[in-house]
Length: 147
Image 1: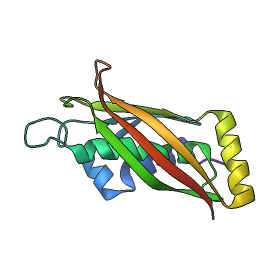
Image 2: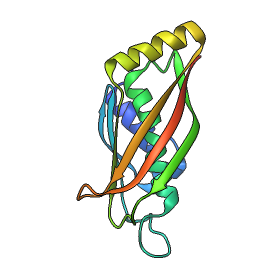
Image 3: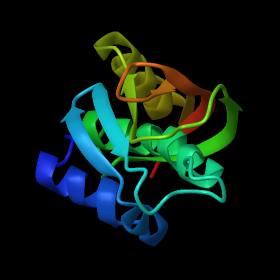
Image 4: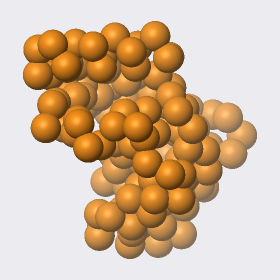
């Protein structure tokens, strides 16, 4: 059974020291759906746009946040196997990312990891500014493993 939402929020925003320092916030934490925001303030690079590492963090964290909202952390744990990020334009404000896993996909992954000890899922995400413009696109390969 997934954890309570306030524990998921705490784990998403505060468990990793780098993420805590970045100011990342979880705006939506629901089974199969997360939306996260990275503030520009404190995450600027040498030209005043968002630092690439902050954008990478925002692209990577949804895989773990989706895990926490959708899977039993007592039975399973996630790892990231690969991450690609394509920068489309400078991020000059706060940036959001939204990720989803359909209920059928969650069930398929749980069944596969229970039977085989692991299962993989890919998240193709768009990082957007307040105007909805895509500033970066990511592709992350995650693996769910049995404890």
